Image (cartoon, rainbow, N blue to C red):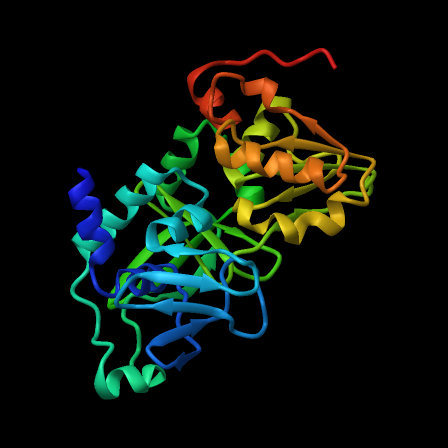
Length: 298
């Protein structure tokens, strides 16, 4: 997109609300001309995430983050600027104009159901061939995938959909299929427990985690493992990471991953950067897809 097109996208009224609604996040109340949410960045219990629908700006008082809708997408999905723009452009192209935020509708948001919110219907074992094919196209054998992911059916507006679902500790589900990335419920970490807590593995996403299992040819990790599901959830993982004698960090080889690694170092976490396993690539899954990589001796 051109810079002018990006400016026009950012000015689209209510785009930030449409985006939040598309990932199942709805406002809790109003405050003047703003909508107030439970922060998707911190998992707070008292709403302090303020959104201005007409300007697509947000201010998260619990985390200190603020900015425009593109910045929000970057934070929530851990993606670069251009990918965030593409994500919003795709959303805008497939959405009808959002409901009005003026007059009575605006003053009573709880009575106006946000039609783009995701509603969980059923969770079952992986069965759909399209989902199985997608998992296997990412280099993950079905026998491994079935241990950790489910087939999630949900409603978006009046339409029914299904995706791969990876459950977080707070009961939400990260959703993935070949054309869609989102989640139902609040974003949070996923913990795979082990009897050995002295060493902890940490991954950004669940495909990174599954790729490591394939790489090491084991159905479950030897150490307690945390999948962040987004680097914005890093603070949720700190109680585990700060207690560990060693943290194996399998973070992405991009600015988001490097920033997360730097944060761990700055907080005194004893980190071993495992990204040398996929040097020159974004993550371990990218290497897994392209090559048969050789295991290290140690």
